Figure 1 (cartoon, rainbow, N blue to C red):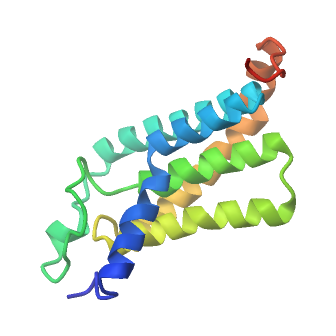
Figure 2: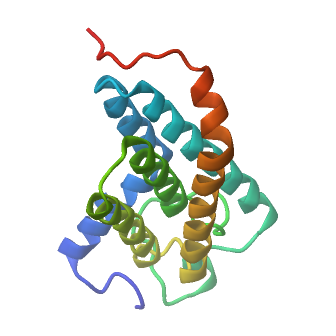
Length: 172
């Protein structure tokens, strides 16, 4: 076997950490940021992550590459079978987009940004370990995620956020 050789503790770790890259994790994180009174930042990061998710789903319909557990007989699927094809890996792409925009908007210090961004790399590694992506899928997802975050912050954030009402007070 090629993947899943780390034993049960490593399998469980990667099964858990991979979920940080789901669009639903971005929704949850945005909700927490929203509840802390940083509504514009929450909506901005969630908008960027949603755009990345939609782009990733569209690209999967164009790049019809089979998943590793289908293409390679020595690979095992270690999580529930995902839908769609393999390129790009949406989990690290969505996570990197979300955290890049959120940390930028929130003014996170460089060390904090680096730690949070590193999580996207670990999520990418989990996707390979779990047998659902090739390394090139993850690399493509990370590059797309960073590109979408940069484009979003440069062009969408300034115009959209300027139009949102100032709602900086925490919810009661």
